[in-house]
Length: 123
Image (cartoon, one colour):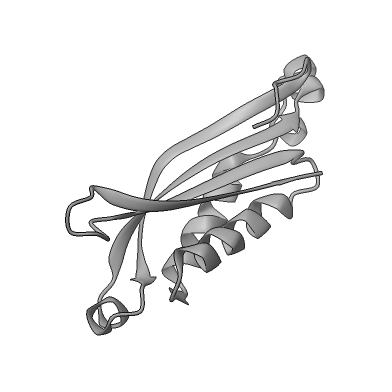
C-alpha cells in the first residue's frame, strides 16, 4: 500500500457484509453465501478538508451502495473475478489514486475461518 502523502485521505470500509452466489460447487451455485468486503481508498482531500463540503469529498456511501448492488445482482464463480469487478467499480471514480479490495469468503475451507483475495490498483 502506498504511503499516505500530505493532502491525501485514506478511506477504509471494513467488513461490508453482502450475500451473493459465489463458487463452483452445486450448493454454491444454488444458494447465496455471505462475503465480507474490505476497501482501502486513497484520494486527494485538500478541497474537502478546506471547504467541509461533500461535493469536494469522495463519497464512500455512493461507492458502497454501488458495490452492494453489483454483488447482490450478479453471480460469480471465482473470488478473483468478484474482487476485480469491485476494484474496477472503485477505480471508476476519477479522484481515486489507489484502491485495495479484499473479498473474504467465510467457511470456504473446512478448517479455515475464511479465504480471501486482495487486488489493488493505482493511477
